[in-house]
Structure formats: structure tokens, C-alpha cells
Amino acid sequence: MNTDSRPLPALVCGVDDGYARPLRTLMQSIASAHPGAVEELRLIVLDQQISEANREAILRDADRMGLRTELRPAPTTDPRYPVSDWVSGAVYVRLAIPEVIPDERRVLYLDADTLVLGDLRPLLRQSLDGRPVGAVRDPQNPVLGRGIQLPGWDQLGVPYGRDYFNSGVMLMDLDRCQQLGVFERSRQFLSEHPDKVRFWDQDALNWAVDDNWHRLERRWNTFAMSPQAAQPGFVHYAEEDSPLAQLLEDEKTAALVHFAGPAKPWQDDYPECQLRGTYRLFHDFIGSGGVE
Image 1 (cartoon, one colour):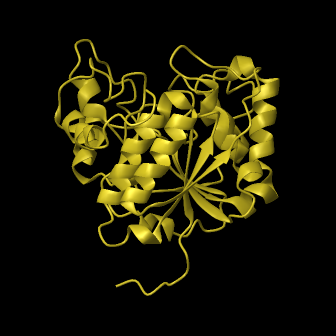
Image 2 (tube, one colour):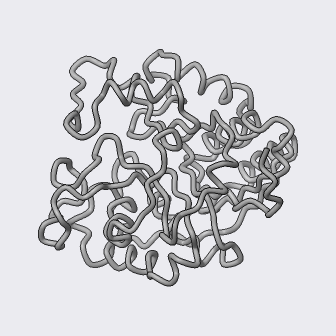
């Protein structure tokens, strides 16, 4: 039994209207994973111009769940930062955490396309051993030089084979981040090297942190690989560093499932599978509420 009575770090998500409904699904999964303990958690939403209807729906859900939730306006993204056809400028909103959340010392950042299946409190209490960020190695692009992340890594002076983390789940020591200039360096990288960005904020953060990050257990950011692996023509390019069989096995013990990539479980054409079914239990439970 844990006797640590200190308040837990806040959970943080950043969304625009496109991810308001997935955020509410994530909130439902958080509440369901913490029966009798949800009041120990706090959620701060970095609000990048969410509609009033979606704000009301988020706060209404939070009140029903008993999950303390606060929406804070977040700045619009610098138009110079690269985006894609399925990623909007909201992907960079996490880089505004120091400005929007100056009153927190540690936070757990979660992408809105994650689903919580286990108790987050052990993760929230975990030591980072003096490092600014705790994260999980990206299962599809685990090391630099053998993936498509950070194109031009060699020109940037980044060593071949260095571990590369996924930014969808990050335990962050904001004091340490400030001391090391993590957010400033990330923004500088995006402004000065947009041609060397493949995975948006994630490339910038990996460059800025410079391998000074705490390796979290894989269960805290388990990719939904089985739906991808079942598709015709699927190739797992990271087999040497991140065997597919192990990634599929990880799904059985996941505390946080991450539906990374352009295919999302709330989309009608997402492959039928157990993980889609699990996601839909939460997604359909909340109903539509606000604006899609």
C-alpha cells in the first residue's frame, strides 16, 4: 500500500476541435481505470480554440466522472512549423506547457489518441532520476539512423543508433526542462530546421533532450500494433531493434494503449479487432455531446 500523501502531478492533454471527442473518450477510460480513486487525479486541457459546445461537453463529462478538469487557453501554433494531411498544428501545443501551466512542477502529458487501461498513479509517482523527461522508446522508430525520423540526423550531429522516444506519453519534470531549455530548444529546432522534421514535435523534443531522458516501461505507451499488423502488405521495418512479436505481446499487459498513426479507432474504416472493440466501449459510452 502506498502511503505517499503528496498531490499527484497533473495529467495534461492538448487538443483542438478535431480531437475533442477522442479526449472525452480518454477521460472516460481514465475514470474507469481508477475506481474509487479518480478524485486523486487532475486533468489540464490545453485548449487550442475548442468550440464552446465541445468545452461544455468536456466539462460536463468531467463533472459526471468526478475527474477534476480545467481548460486553459493555449496559443496558436507558429505557422512555420510543419504539419501534414492528418496532423494539425495542435500537435505542437504541448510545447506551450511552460507558458500555459507555469504553476505545475511535474506533469504527465498524454496524446488524445491514447486509452488508459491501468492505474496511472505508479507512473505519476515515478522518479526521473534528475532527467527532464520520462518516455518510452518509439516501437516503430526506436533508434536513429534505422528509421525515417529526424531526416538529416547526421548533419545535426546526432549519433547513429541513439534511442528515440515517442512523445505521446511523457512524464515531465518542468523545473528540469526549464533548467535545460528543453522547450526553447525544441521551438528553435522547428524554426531553424523544418526540412529535418518528419515526426513534428517528437523530432524536436528528441533533438532538444539530447538523449537525457528516463526510459519508462513499455506498458506506459503500448502501440496498437495488432490492427496494423493484420493489414495486407504491412511491413514492420524496426524488427531488428523492436521485434513485432514482442510488441504484440505487450498489448496484453498495456496500462496505456496508443493509437498512433493516421488510422484511428473512432474511424469507421478502422480494422475490426479487440483493441477497436475496447476503444469503442468508452467512445460510444460518452455519446456525441458537443460538436464532432
